[in-house]
Length: 485
Image 1 (tube, one colour):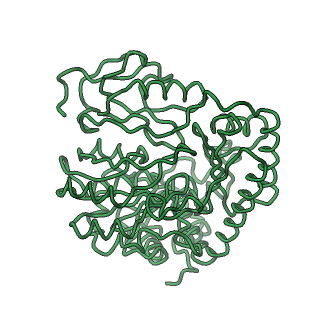
Image 2 (cartoon, one colour; image 1 turned 180 degrees about the vertical axis):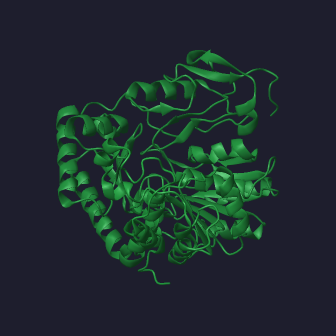
Image 3 (cartoon, one colour; image 1 turned 90 degrees about the vertical axis):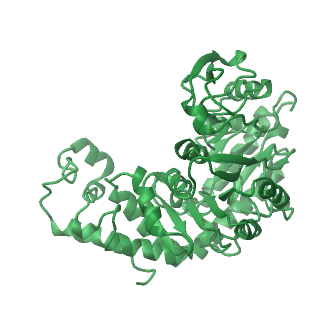
């Protein structure tokens, strides 16, 4: 088959045109049974929101059009196998880890991982060996993993089964994936890559190296982020040394048996679009991002950072499509600028943290959108600039891991007021979402610095999620004797 084909999409069109009598689920019967939903989403959409049937294959056991679509995706991404995922990249990350690790086995990884990684460790019982990333003091952000730190972690944990890498981080920072992969394989370890923000690496020109090109074993890729598919659709890529049949079995442990054909078709159509037009698409995005950076840096006090951060190690490369902007010199936290942009200028950025905000650019943007952002930032500086004093300047605090995420998550706990938690072992997650990187994870000690960080983030308006206490005024702390280290 050729990359200009989209077998699943084409099969859906054939089913739509066949005018089948739908005596199956879903119960809205191509939209006829739910007028309000049809008016909201459109008849075209509801007519292909269908159940699995022979002409459309089955995601849990694909033998025809889904298999063909996944094979085309594998070819487009340079992988030995590709799996369509309808539970977001979270489900792809879970499948990577659950198919690689068993209870008690170790995985080397950076601590600034997405919550889905640590959730997976809760499920499988593996032991995390955290490599604390280096940080950029000016920006207050975590960088990539230094190769020397990886070497030390391997030397101290020779029995580890895998190394997990972010490629790139939310901010666009890339580690040396190829060198880390070479090191891991030399020690018999599998390499797993969270490439949620790196879909475009596979299709753009002069982009950072992809996981598959670097020889990694598995990669979780969010097509819905920079690839243009529907939210919640994703892919899991596998290298040639992976038993793809076993991986599918693991995927089927947690993935729905009622996969949305809207999501699946969006993956098929988006892969075709990227394979045919990716270079042109992402050259345009790079031009947008560079123009925006140049203009924002001319305003004064903002710092839209890019490839000048590259140091050949902890910032081995940089994703220049990312428009990350540091705001501390105008006296505002990134989350405050994020909120002002939305509430007063009708601009929805991707996220804001304590020092930065991220504007996620894609081929769907227009010149006028970029100009509007630049104009708004000029106005915000004029109206809101103040002294920088009193701002917290880092988004990463090194954790003290006392026990594994699984042991802590299932241990006996008591609810304690946040102010009184210092010294206790956390039994749940606390994270700012987005980006979804835990501030605290199960099994980590609560320190006064972390309490202050949480209070400050809450005061600045960060959306904190994870704890049972919805306002994060309390944390679940492990009872003494309910766990072992």
